[in-house]
Image 1 (tube, rainbow, N blue to C red):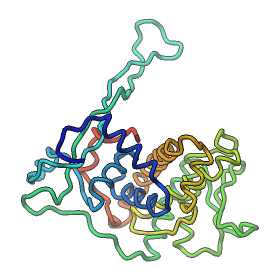
Image 2 (spheres, one colour):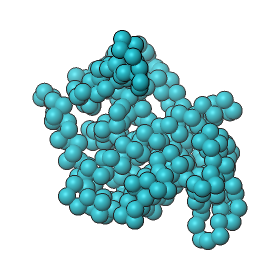
Image 3 (tube, rainbow, N blue to C red):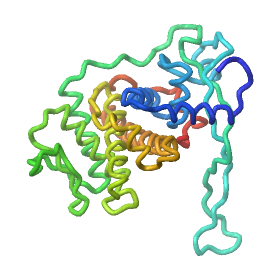
Image 4 (spheres, rainbow, N blue to C red):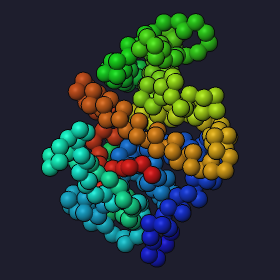
Length: 309
């Protein structure tokens, strides 16, 4: 996209075209890597940021850079979709006329917003996010403790024991238990726990997405959540289920596979953001902040915080 005027409709078309081209696991993983780096952005904007500047490391609006004493040195930034919100009063259920109800934000459209990477700014040195730490067992164990706390908050206990088959773990919704195989090392164990927490947050055993057709989507979603969460904390996993990314999307909706991919990406990003927020709080309270990013004040502005596109 050049310097010409760009409308929100143009960005939507570019986004749809980019998503529809998805074919490989590496392409999906690339978007998830951006989600780990910028967890406050919706899926559509993550795709747009990666498309326009794959090497972006820290993005913010011009006004936010000015608050840090830095000035944007180029007129050409990264264009994203900024939601237009209005507040709407909601009537209380069973309430009386004249009694104020709750107020909620509603998105009525989008306009074009512009953000700039740190490399597009000049000014005094600032503290940039640290590079990823070398993964070690301590990181994995601390993240395990944070996820176990999340599971408990959701009403699930975590058991480490033989699973009874070749699986690395499963969620027993009837008993409210997450079972992780006892033969896994620290890295695989925390990755599996993150995967199961993705299921807990997104899926139910009898929901509309429990059919055989949608089962592949559920696995991709859960594994994608685990991928984003671990990447945010400097850990990495090989997500074998991503190899089928294009295939399962066409299976769910042969006519509009891009719609399936966008919906899946939105669900993944929203759930991963929740787990990133909670584990960040837990880890920051119990040890030094983990890499790659724990405090990113510049990309947390509510103007750009969803909904996922």
